Image 1 (cartoon, rainbow, N blue to C red):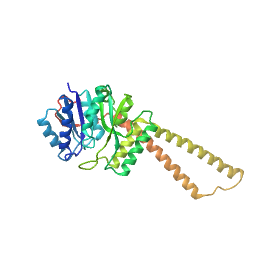
Image 2: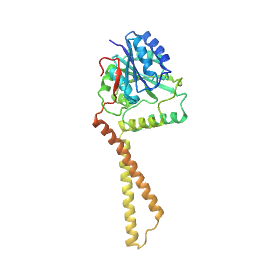
Image 3: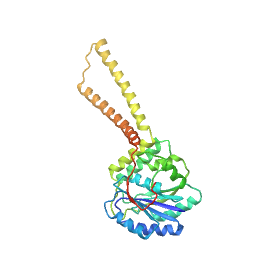
Image 4: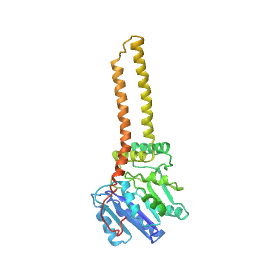
Length: 311
């Protein structure tokens, strides 16, 4: 029986893998000999897969899954969780910004009965002011517009118990937002606060485009607030338009005045048209999610693995 599984999504992290493997193995050996480290290669185009396969050839506790292409960070984590065998499953990034040494404290709280243990970041060195601001704003926005309590300032560095991992596997939505999905289950969490180190090698893979897509997935997965905004704007401008119609009819037929103002007419038309397009875009995001779920395509395709019984 495996006591601890560590799931690591990997995308072009060849410079970090050697130190990561050494620190992670040392930490786990101090806790138990019944552990596994599961690398999920998310379409890396550097030497990451070769390094992982080399470790797996000399250490039977190293497992790997390699995708045919880049399917995304959340899908890589989900694939690892689905195939992890441990009673405790720990997810973390492979860039060394999630210190492996924190696993000892996480596991201690797990043995005390907590089924979800989060590592909460106190600082984010090495990241731009823009990224820090947008991340802070996103988490606080999510907290206000969703009915679930998504923890603030936590990433994907967490421990979940076997029961949580199994329930997570039952959620089949195509656009995954694991932070929300785990919080939605309602298990009482425990938090460990830490100072997050800066990235040693390479650059972040979380570009503005990916950040935006991640935020949209999170909001549309767990909140109907954007749809409610679209509905409110529709009602508001319908009322404004009705009042303007009454004003125009009164001016022409009662007061016998011509309503002038080409500029104001064009401005109002363009503004209302823009609001309509915005609302259509919001509705489109939700329809896109429905469409992706209806198609029921797999979230990832595995090219090779050393796991005999793939989930």
